[in-house]
Amino acid sequence: MDSGKIIFSQLTSYLPIKAFNRCVKKYNGNKKVKSFSCWDQFLCMAFAQLTYRESLRDIESCLRAMQPKLYHMGIRGKISKSTLADANENRDWRIYADFAQILIDQARKLYQDDSFGIELSNTVYALDSTTVDLCLSLFPWAVFRKTKSGVKIHTLMSLQGNIPVYVWITDGKYADVNILDELIPEPGSFYIFDRGYIDFHRLYSLNLNKAFFVIRAKKNLKYKRIYSHPVDKSTGLICDQTVVLPNYYSSKHYPEKLRRVKFYDSEKDKNLVFLTNNFLLQAITICELYKCRWQIEIFFKWIKQNLRIKSFYGTSPNAVKTQIWIAISVYVLIAIVQKKLKLPIELYTFLQILSVSIFEKASIFQLVTNGDYITNQVNNDQQLFLFDL
Image (tube, one colour):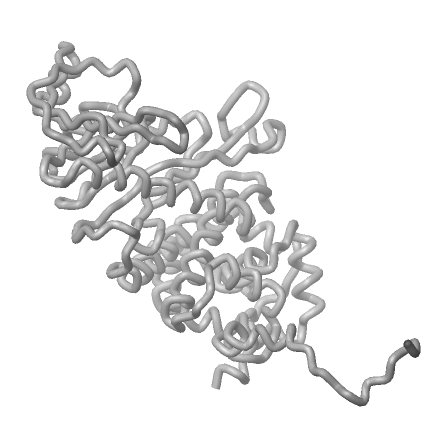
């Protein structure tokens, strides 16, 4: 039974080890490795993510203190700071990238029927990036600005379950819009972008692949109105127009019609203009779809606050990418466990509980559902008072 295993072992039991071994074999990860395997490395780094370890020395000290429990955690190699540093430095980060993708595919199947607030049969994705600032002297390869380095984590996220579908890691100077070249459009799906991704040539490529997009327009957009559709202005809609691009280059890059929807956001007292190639959905639904893009901003905020991706255990590109991909694997693993066990708590709360009970011997479900017993106070009539009143 699960109650006989420590919490960490219960979590890792949801990992497909055979699939992990295939990833290791693909990139010869265990070549000339005698004691500290790629699996040992992954488990140590996953432990660091779950328990908020700040450094390699921190990881080493904590795991060595729990030496009798390492076998039950699945760790067979000897734990040392130098061994873990060498593993992060030299073992191909693509092992963990491919394994994270396998976990993502599992999570997507579990969350594919979840609602994200809009009744829509199409799959909806949001694409955005977040920058992790780094020290220029320690990370000179991560080009960003003159005074500091940085890496960008470009993420395509499925709004059904808020699962990251694809992740690209680049230096800080890499333009967001270039990621559209890496995107493989899924016909019939919606892609939600901020205005930083406006490139009509790339957007037209999405249109040719039968995919829909919703993107916020720039203020200086030039357009020619062809037709205006009636709107219910009580909903905040200002106009719903069919337009074409009149400029030479923009019309050459996107020769077909576009839909322009203008909306007044009363909360921020701001007018928002959206462009889309979908002419079937109601105009207010187009606005609601863009509003759901905020979920990816919440995701970036969540992983920066709760996973170790703002400070790194190594300074090389391989070490940084390894740590980021294992962090993503941990996030997806927690989402998988939460869904399979049908845990009635938020992901944030689940992670907080795991961080302080990783070595406990109790089932995960029992640990989560019986958490209130600690706050229950027992009234004892025989309890003596310290002072007589």
